[in-house]
Image (tube, rainbow, N blue to C red):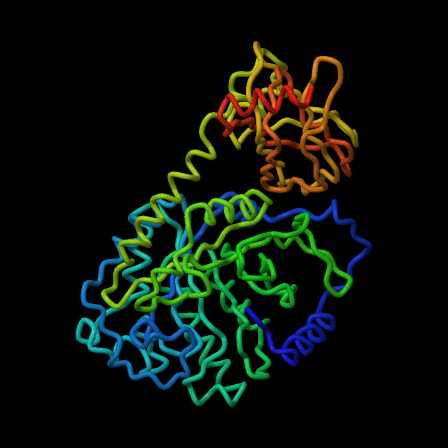
Length: 461
């Protein structure tokens, strides 16, 4: 996800010149579209890399690979989807064309595609098969269509290439059902200036609800933005609204990272690169747990199957996520107001609203007896915007409220871990909000063994 400096500068100038003149905006006044709200609720997706690179032990193809190398021997996208579904992911994005220009569907725009391969006698359609399999397993489907093309000679003629690229996009947008996400990757580019306005106009003609993922530099054109690295971590307070060229837009983060360290495509003799379960769990908490979308890269092998080790790790990851979401102690709260109960019921369709016009408020959970606590999950209702500017998680010591975690943004979801404590009362203290806060969920958990909690609780009294 690296744009050439020339392409970024030109893109910024064009965006600045074409952006509408707006009145003064406040970060807290910008709201998401219904499509963005629904997309953020998906939380976790998978991006799939599978092409000629798979058969040539490459990460970056140069456009010279023969279509004859593409010939999976045990093609079974259902096997992929079973593992992806088990991981807890809610959507998949297929790389329909990577930078080498090889197309995974029988496009009418070039012969450099699966129709020129021996696979299924040139009658196969990877995009169609994967889209059907994803939906069969209840997963939403999207596509990645690389603007950079290292094979097609038209790339050197911007006008001719734009026409070619848009024709490919029209095929994908018209023939493969609803697209949950369209990836507009900016790697390479070689100084080529793309007509992003036409790309978005073409996509929106057929797919008005698709979320467009793009680098922050393409601020005007994307609906979601890149986190800035491929580490799978959000290392800053996460605000969904960002400022570019003096304009504010709702641009939630998607943080991408491959299942295998530094490898998006499959490579032989590469077992050591598989991320550990502990690493994946930490990545989940550093992305989804910091209000972002997690996009995990998986890669089928030359058989057309996910390696057994990868499928097993995805299953383990799904079980770990399930454990993170199991045992919400807030469900055991003592009777409270119906309004407060709406944030303690485990139902993200309900929410608690602080008093109208307030800029400081508290949401308290009381238990019949002391419970072990070392983690909370908070979620804002974002339909009306992101409003919490500073908060603290506090427990009652019997004499006073004690802060165990704090932050400056909650957003879609925030997971806060802290030293294990014992308490019968815990609260979300919203110290500052631009207007009344709306909290979908305040969930309370404990992962620590009771003996550890007791010893640490004693030392903190």
